[in-house]
Length: 115
Length: 120
Image 1 (cartoon, chains in turn blue, orange):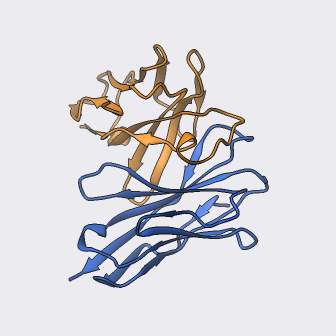
Image 2 (spheres, chains in turn cyan, brown):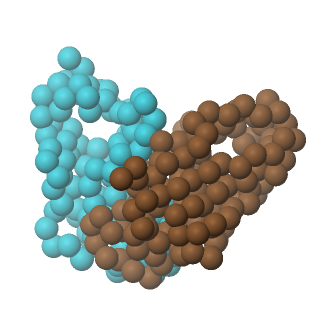
């Protein structure tokens, strides 16, 4: 079974609209971390936002927020007021520190922002 | 503060040739990682090093070796390159290691710019 599932291979969104990128995860651990990364066409991996499993509030970083629903094992990324520069590949990832030191990545969602 | 640096940026090899990809970080991080990225496959972990002097296999270690030379440097070696190793290779580092969930930036992995490798 996949540890990280991103069900949207591609999305098209109009500029200035809000975007939700879906991510579900699978773990039996109580302690874990969830991450979102952005990969623009230039290829670099850019860290966006982090949510710890014990964090009571949803993480926010500027226009990015993480809609963390622990019972549903869901960690959706919300981008408010999308911009053309948000067009990129987005990866959800999880770390289970008491299992090993790895981060497991989902297969990604390609987001296209339309002018 | 350069973060994570990788050399080379691009490389073309012939089948059977060997090469070493270099990675260095200047953030005093404990853990370092090597990933490969193939179309439609996301990132897959090749090897990682939770601390200086230790290395462990990831999801796809076959055909690769690694060396954690010191706290800063973590190299990936292809002894006999194969076309199936054509990929983009990323090095990453993070502050914390196994067994810890420190929160926020301390758990986060920071990536180098990548090496695009083609094996003919």
